Image (tube, rainbow, N blue to C red; front, side):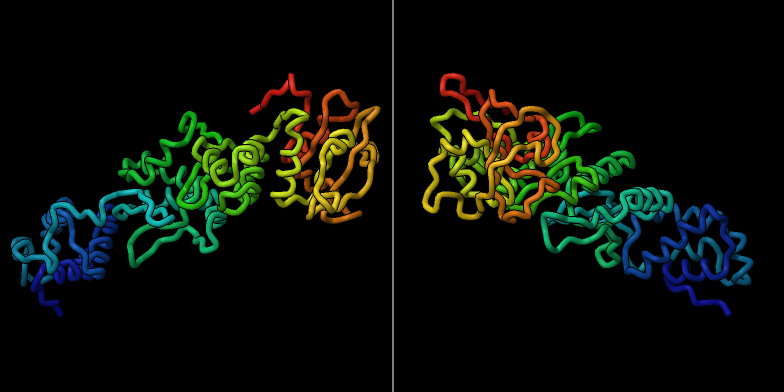
Length: 373
């Protein structure tokens, strides 16, 4: 039985059911069928290719229809949805919409394969969004007809390169982030930049991504980012200084800081205004800090004076330190030290402590004060 051909849509469906296409044409014919099913228009170029295929298989059309219709008959019909010169909703494009990165492009088996390979190589790390509790994995959204996922830096980077490779357009919402990243685009350094009410960090390995602190602009977040050797943008540092004051902002945004003995009160302000599980202060430095009553920081419990050698770190002739730990006698260095304060010239293994500390504060005499950024 010959299906009645009343328009190009029905003619296309008849052709799919009755004609034998080469493997080079069948994919395109299937794509057009999906367009018809989704009630979407073809572009001028797609329609032109379809007409060439009709002409290419004209003998089969005449034979399979028993002469009921031929090439000219089918080409005289119109699509239910008129052909469009340009379909802006389907042009290849990479953009960001409300913290969601989206990618669209006309279906191409090889391009889709390349994209899936890119996503599979990254595993599920693209679903680990630290800047939002409502993250989503990268997936195909059949309703919106786009690939979408939570926009965090490594995904932005990879999809940016992917789009450039396949000559897709890149929206300003993505390009602005790419342009803000310091260094060569093929060798991005970890860099924290303001993003809405939080921050975004570029060029993260999966392991570093998982270790990022919450997406908030706080003293602790700035401390942890700097402790991970992530560079903070000028805007990021300015926002912290504006919110918490110059002194606290300076400490928060610098991993190794040198202050004078007369500024040692800043250390107390820092410790009292940040959450710390473990603080180690050289005994001489601690004696110069006038604590409020009770005598020690609110959240920290003074434990004991000890030699670093007791913790089996290398070195000879090590000095004594006070340990302030929220875990009491159960403190451990396994997770690092939140802050270490020392005075130069003392005999202790500075390298061992500095290596595991998020914050290193050196107290010097006033005339030798310098800041190491």
